[in-house]
Image 1 (tube, rainbow, N blue to C red):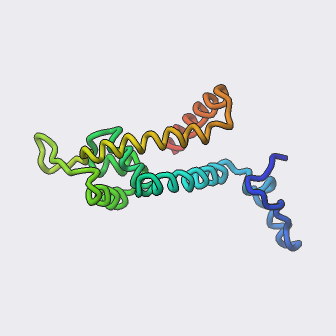
Image 2: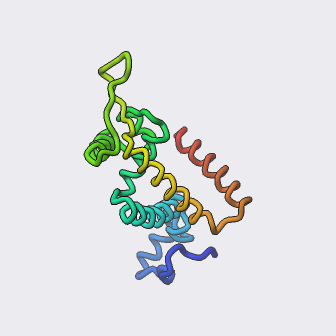
Image 3: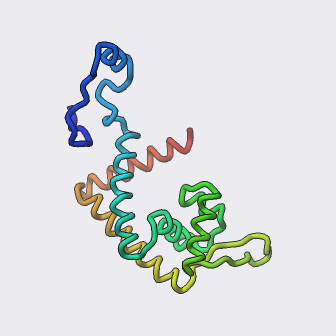
Length: 170
């Protein structure tokens, strides 16, 4: 049986009723063998370390840096675009954008031809911060993938693409 994600000893049912409940469930091999659970654990572990790096080097949160990365990559973007690409709801994207405006990293600019549409754009300070964000994200990505060979990386990338496509179709 594959090793559990956490170093805790395997969970043992505490009563006959608990054993019966587990026998009826889909957790026969353990909750920590479910793909969605494992992806969540990996996400939390990598986010924790990445957040520490961003806060230490830039005094920004992971969420703010992700938004800065989206704005820099898809430049310029609307709040709706930011929400979509950063996987946030519109109110979260709006609050993140305001924090970045307050930090002087982004500005708001009316779209040419339709002043009702406002785009988020990087300031000069934001452009420098974007380069740092990308550098940290690139190093973190390499750190996470260091456990895999190039062939395994390519395989995992393709499999993740397939899973994402499937989940988007649900």
